[in-house]
Length: 277
Image (tube, rainbow, N blue to C red; front, side, top):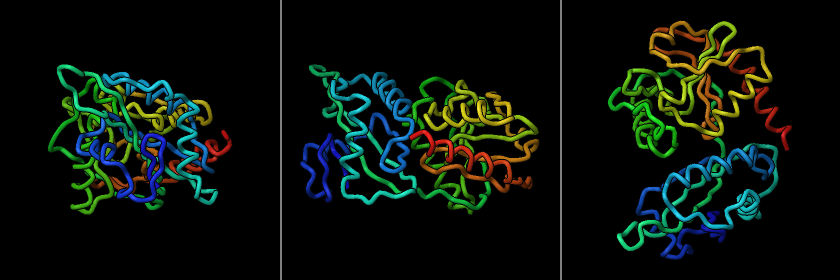
């Protein structure tokens, strides 16, 4: 089931040509909504994140794009789905309806929404570095779509070389993020994560987990520049995004990590999310 601008289709062949033609162009914004029992978790945070990204994209935002509107669109796409206890992901992409021209530089925007089952891995993975191309340490890199092609390249590199994921560096040789989400390091009673100024994605999932750790655990959160050698000092590493879940790391180079505290954070955080409904 695919939702194009509020109309659902069971087959792509049913989608009108004027809607399909948008996919010949890159999306201006991609977003992953975490859903539990057909309800968008952290709906308000997702909504403001989407609106902020669209405003920076120089398009006409439809007046019907309200907080309630996006939940209604999710209800449409889940209409024929059985309700369960599991999490699922809504992949949401926004496209310009028309390419910019001199006469019409700013066009309206449309969206495509599709359900994706979570494929969150439970076993620890091994990590490597992706060093072919750096991410720029600036505010534009905080948008998800800016460096999505680089994350895809890093993901392919990892799988081709028998790793679970890759870490990406910025132009200052600091670790920015991973191909599977935000990086977190547990060092004694502190949890370190790359700062936004490093170029990491300013995602709802990153903000939610940082706030949860601050308010609901005994760890101190530290947002800072992270050098590669800092990984050797950590007791545990994990990666986090709603798309990939909380990915435990078992090894980076010759360093092996435990996963006990990462697992405890994962369980308590997702139980916390369930109780927000």
